[in-house]
Length: 221
Image 1 (cartoon, rainbow, N blue to C red):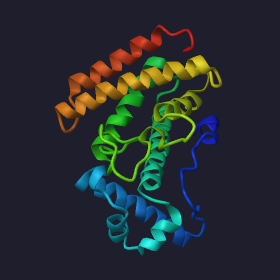
Image 2: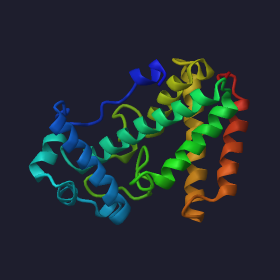
Image 3: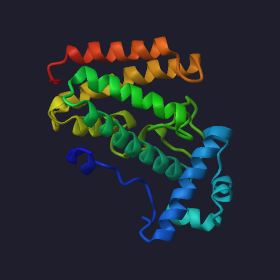
Image 4: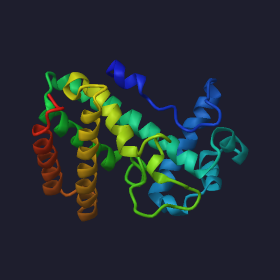
């Protein structure tokens, strides 16, 4: 992954960062259990008790890592973003050299691929996918970073990953990516409402919309 993208990885709202192998395995099982249950019951019905039972850990172990449901969801969203960026980085490396249009297509394609295949990603990608804020979650707009909204946090990571393509450190480039993400998010939500695997015509329109927008922005090279 691009060094700048690595440097901006969010630590996640974890009470105790797992270090030893046993703790890392438990931590991973808890997030895996959370993802699986999201697909089965959704974010509103999800409980920390059920997650602990699915992960086969005592509830006290879960609370060693997470203060509650919001922190658990935030940690899963952070893991999803890290995985997305790693997978996108591999695609970009294989496609080099990359301009804004290719970056857009690959970014949309990888997001769609994860929506189709990664457990829990349909309910929680880098933030909650549904309009309702479930109990136990104070502010779903800041799951990735308490200081900025989810799409701004993602924009900053994509800006770092894209390197000079998106002028790292340029606030206007960050704003441009945030707007592009808001637009893509809306169209892709529609695509997955229309069809379980995502409506191909709407996915294609999402790419076209974002490519056209970025092509008009002076902050994008």
